[in-house]
Figure 1 (cartoon, rainbow, N blue to C red):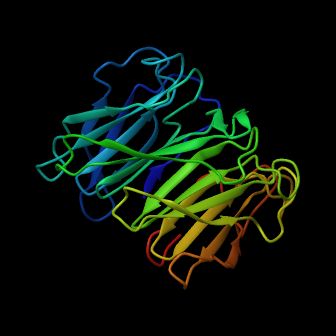
Figure 2 (cartoon, helix red, strand yellow):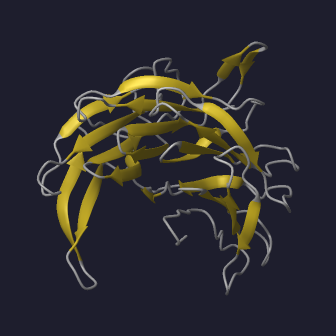
Length: 289
């Protein structure tokens, strides 16, 4: 599950990621500092991170290795319980282009990783769809030494400036992608898309599109997403439930193997107020969100 999310308008360049390990009681100890082997100014390495088992993934969405700010992601692996994390591989999109921001959102679960590129200009049957966004799935079958590209996920109803992939998560056989500027319920109301794999991550089929039952203009539903088992959570930082941009989050559940994901509950802060942007980051694991 994603352990942190991207923060808007950083005032400095993030050049590293830090791994912490629980030391018992209420403390954590630093175990490792991760740096890009080819790090450069303004790469924004560490803007997104996730960890699962022996693997960690770090996004660098402004990396210029292919075209300008096309982006990348780095995978690290531990074999000593988390004390050291050697670099394993660097991921780039097979169709990388200027300004895709590949790596703005990342997630990893077992031997499958997913990387969002929310400014990707998807090219479909009707031509290029500007800033429609996408996400790329990678899988390892050799213990993490190599990570092969599997599939590119796009929205079945892709539209310009939806920014699919602004947030991503993966859990078991399911992946969820946020499209916070989708206009289905008004300008920038937002949505999220769920995909399912039945072959360990090699292929993925679209299952459902999630929208808020009370979606409205500028809610930005999908700015953050999480998925675990048969439950999904979607943040809507711009929802005005407790005042302008107070924010909220929505829970969905499937009971038919992922075909449908009915709405279950809307979460708001007990002390919510205007400008809080509750739901800017979300996650879910087991019985907790």
